[in-house]
Image 1: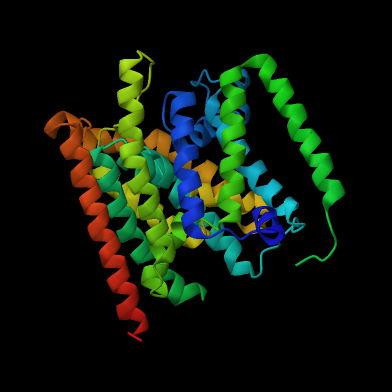
Image 2: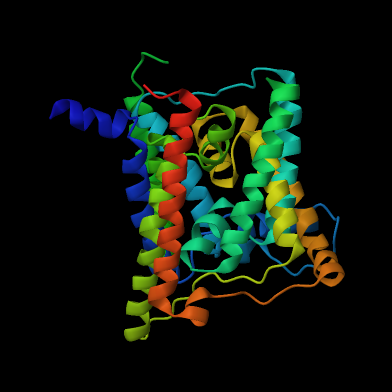
Length: 163
Length: 207
């Protein structure tokens, strides 16, 4: 019993426990937010606002207040803080530096490709793979196959240059 | 791994979260609930080491499909779960929209780029957010890339749409009805689950 309680905050939980809890929470987001959970639409909105603040673009009328009233902002913030809380509960919170300089390059390149890809496809693993398929939408399945092809190509790059 | 207990920091952070929630509740109950659920999502992602990137990548890289099967389980619950939520919302006249997006060449190109990107960045968008919370500098850098990439993607989507066209979203229940749509998708997921089990056995040798 005591060990069971310890596992709750120390972890790790098994994958299938994670899957069941995430499925329930994902449906809760749908019911509360009235649209499914997504990540990159909000990141795109913040990027447009940042670009406007930096003076890169003028024609966007997005405001800081709008972003702070957008549920997407709280979804993304919540995931970051929730994960931080999880490490803190296990007394594992710390800064984890990049192990090798080449990973700085791969992180920035990977982030760029992901951000671009997600926004031209209108979704990421959450918005389009998970919730596109959960919404019984054909685009979810098409995107999933494409992501798999991309991961196959990405793994080849990873094996050749990074590992 | 640190041996030192961080309970003081944890207590302080818990108060900080409570403060944020009390602040947010003044603004909107909906935002507060969304925030609370997403905190639980972040917590669960971290505790169960859930990672969509690994689910796609590990079968190819190391022949392990445990996480892939977990993602399939997540979908197996979500497909009927969303259908039931939509049906109940419909009966109760509660506004609820599912995500049915138009698609085209950009869906495929975008998916391929996204797939390459998440392997290079060591995490997809949810994985990047989770690992920022875990304190990984690599994903903090990836997040900067994500912002720049999303910005570029936003302004090049019209190019893809006008150059290659776009098909209106296809909502499977509209085409074949709710029950067959859910059944067909569950069947595909079951086949995928069988394939992942067979693949893991094949890659790691029987016995």
